[in-house]
Image (cartoon, rainbow, N blue to C red; front, side, top):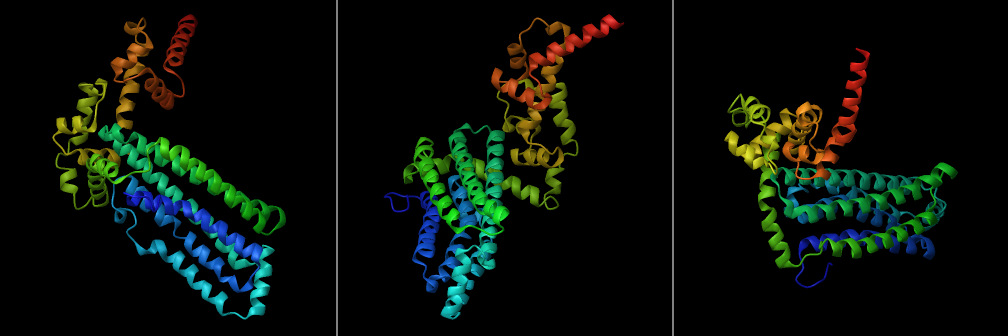
Length: 378
């Protein structure tokens, strides 16, 4: 992936992410089996390399979303842990050989405080960046749904699957570190030696299977076409971020019509625009005569939800009223889903159950059952 012809940066960064496990396996073999105290400094070097995992992950996610690396990795603070850990290698180079032997014995016994703390901080580092990465992919997906961009569905699936793979591997490594500490009170280097290769094999198998099935390995023409496809989405996301972060500077634009929420309610409560199948953010923004980014920011910041969450709430409420109305008793649930604005029975059931904790059919039956009981008691 790193050295293939006609390559793109996204493939290179993906290859680098894969190499972290390889470097750790090589380091473990050198450190544990060769038992060379003079190579003790490699522990810090390996830790320093692994502390770059976070920014490299964010850079890859930026590239696979068609963005520039600088849009996600803006600060040099990302690399401070790596630099500090690298500098600590100087200490292990400078100390006398006899002290190196003592430290090496402690490392192999799992009793060396510095390297134990470094291992724990690395796992925390992985967890934090995986959380940030997952959040960014989720936001990317939400904005794509708001704009109705179905073209990036496969890319988002790959990003989520890749992060889930990394999260699973990190949990495995965390268990390999934590379980011995809880049982014996110290880490177990040989368990780590076993866990990393297992994690690596799992990751390589995942890359071969999912990476190829999701077409996540690009050549230059394919990546260029993908970048052009997602440019409107990334421009939209950037504009929303600017409006959200700089509310004061854009207050006049966001509040250019103080009745924006009332106009929004007019469209949904009175005109029932949500019953239109395939309703998109652009459609509503055009009716309100505002830019899509302005409307999205207003919904996100003022109503505390995404555009499609708002639409689905209205659709569920619309369906609820029809499910229990006497004029609609003979209508099938699928028809009510359609006239409420849902484009399929599956999406209707999924969204309805998410909001009410029961299926539309269960909701309807429960309502009429309770109505009959109430009538009998009266």
